[in-house]
Image (tube, rainbow, N blue to C red; front, side, top):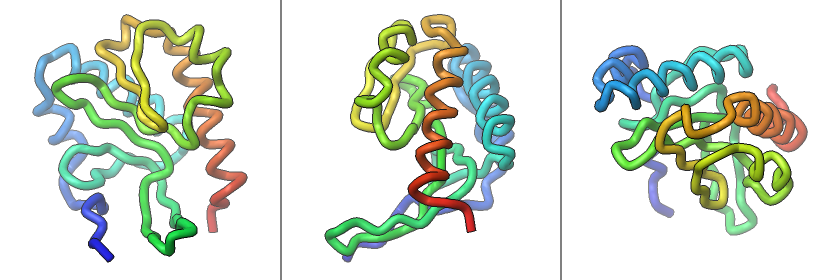
Length: 140
């Protein structure tokens, strides 16, 4: 089985965010970081080279693949601010319709800039993620 590459690192989150370009993406990353820290009550930590994560949980798929990952996180990538929310967006269609300009995959939300979206809706989606995680992966 392949080794999981996304693991916690010792890189300082503030140093990572301070190096994000352009400036608007850096400021948006600081805003999302503060929101997620407030909601989770967990300090941010780097997962791999580009993901800022909060908390941790252990997963195991039916295939036998298992590992550890952050409960919630984001990455200020060049193409978009990517926000990782589990379990996906199918159950939150009403919120997704109110979010504003975005794209999404199964559990990834892609935002060009925070001014394109409703931050209260983003926070509601993040709260839904935390509720889901607590139900399916309770903290030990």
